[in-house]
Amino acid sequence: MTVRVRSFLSMMCRARNAGGQAAIKVAFGVLLVAASALALYVMTSPKKDVIAEKPDAAFLEAMRGAKPESVSPLPPLSGTEAPLVKSVVFTPARFSSLDAVQAEVRLTGAPGVPVSYEYEWIVNGTPLRDVSGNSLPAGRVRKNDRVSVVVTPIIGGSKATPFQSMSVTVQSAPPSLDMKVLTPQTEKTAELQLVGADPEGGSVTYAFESPVPAGVSIDKNTGKVLWNLPSQEKRVIHFSASATNADGVKTVRTFEVTVGPR
Image (cartoon, rainbow, N blue to C red; front, top):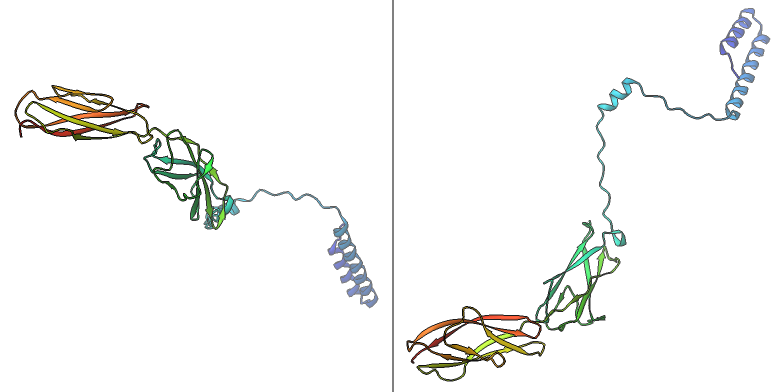
């Protein structure tokens, strides 16, 4: 429906010029009816899709000169939404019963809030209830034990998903090695004793390491050393010896001994 306002204005002007009060009233009435009909048409007509028009050049030029608003960073993640544990690294990577072991936690990303951890050490499937923290003390495991640790991140007071590390097999511990003089030295001989022990209670064999001194012999099972002195001069000799356990783990030490006449 189209309302031509100009026609109504013309009608009113003609009525005024004619001096007819009744005609003016009629014109106003017609105008009122037309306005009501227009409002009803707008309210009841079906809606049409809005088509976005291409912005003109002036609008685009104004937008180019506008400064972008500052963007606030996203709030840090917390709770179970925070980065979870990616891996746990043991130091040393290969350890024996003689080593204290440290567990280092590595996350999938950098959290935006402080993170603490709970640790539960597992040996052969059994938790060590009296060990807490990221360190496993020396002497708590034996050769061939399987060791892992369960790490639970605590972020913003909430516990995230626990992570269990891969199990690591405890290696054979190196034997100890020491030396003592068995008998007083004479001008021609010296008798020494190598003393070794396997922390796991296994057997130990002994040997000299290169370079082997002249005139010396050793019993590989007992560690007894007999030294036939090639010279009667008093001197200090350095030599290296080793103790090896049944798993082939070797300990090498260098010793010092004074030989010759007193």
